Length: 157
Image 1 (cartoon, helix red, strand yellow):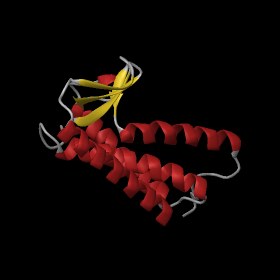
Image 2: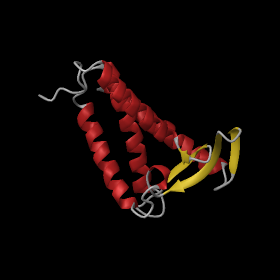
Image 3: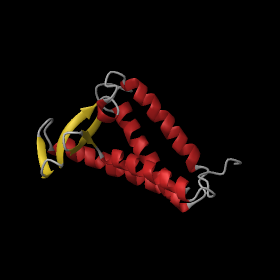
Image 4: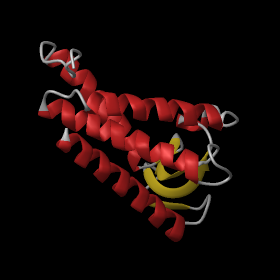
């Protein structure tokens, strides 16, 4: 459980520090190439979900983020293996950081926009928490597929 909490806290700190850096170092909309057109830095504020889906429904994503944080806490209290502790820590930290953005960033409480700054070609702009969400989800699928007899949680607790 402590490993999960430590990883989650580390993800929150890393995500928020990089967002702070992006806001203080980049101009909104201006792209700084890192790997040509493939990867760059571009500050954007996202009111929606991935690919700015649901941009007019920010409050729904705030509720979804809160439910995801509650689920991460539930799993954290029941984790049984180091591999799942790492996965839950990554996912829990990422959704907690996004929830913090939704609650505390402009334009208002519960309607905050997520700070994005990693531009992947012309496809989308994301952040560090997004990397942990995708990586954690892929790791969860891999763990489930390769070690089905070693469950995530102890449901009897």
